[in-house]
Length: 242
Image 1 (cartoon, helix red, strand yellow):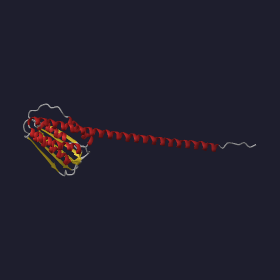
Image 2 (cartoon, rainbow, N blue to C red):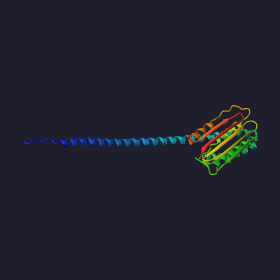
Image 3 (tube, one colour):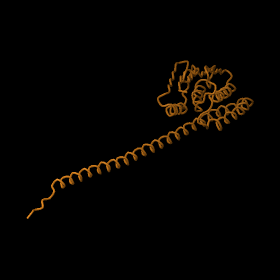
Image 4 (cartoon, rainbow, N blue to C red):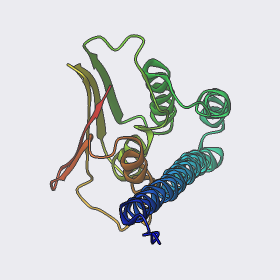
C-alpha cells in the first residue's frame, strides 16, 4: 500500500516565503514609521524656527521702540532748559520737535526707510542742538551712491545722541562730524565727536546697548562695530552690508 510522503520542498519554500514577506513587511513598516518620525521632526524644526523668528521680530520691535522715548527724553530735557533761559529758542526747538516726532510716528515704524530720511532726521536733530548751544559745530558728509539706499530706521541715532550727550551738551566748544560712505556692498558710517576737557560722570548707555543688540539681530556675523575713545575724541566706525 503506497505511503503518502509530505512534499518537503513545498513546505520549505512556503516557510522561506513567509520569512521574506515578514522581512519586507517589517522594512515597509519601519520605513513608514521612519517617514512619520522624520515628518514630525521637520514640522517641529519649522515650528521652532517660526517661533524663533517671531521672537526676534518682537525683540527688534521692542528695541526700536526703546530708542524713540530715549531720544524724546533727551530733547525734552533740552527744551526744559531753554524755556528757563531763552523762550525764543525754546519756541524754535518746539517747532523742530514736531517735525522729528512726525518722522518717528510715520517713517520709523517701517522695517526699512531711505537712508536720506534718516540723514534728514539727524540734520534736524543737530540743528536743534545748534539752537540750544551756539558753540556746537557739526558736519554731515555722504560719499558714493547713497541715493535710494534703504536701511532699518534709527541705526545711527543712538551714536549721534551719545555724541551730543557726552560732547555737544558740555561747556565750551564742541564738534561732531558724520560720514556715510558706500563702498562696494557695504555702508561705512563714521562718527567723530569732541570730548570735554573736564568730564562729569553721566548715567546712561541704554541707547548704545540697544543698538548693539539690534545690529546683532539684523546683521548676525556680517557687521563690524568699532568704538575708540581718547582723551579728546570719541570715534565710532560701523560697517553694515547693503
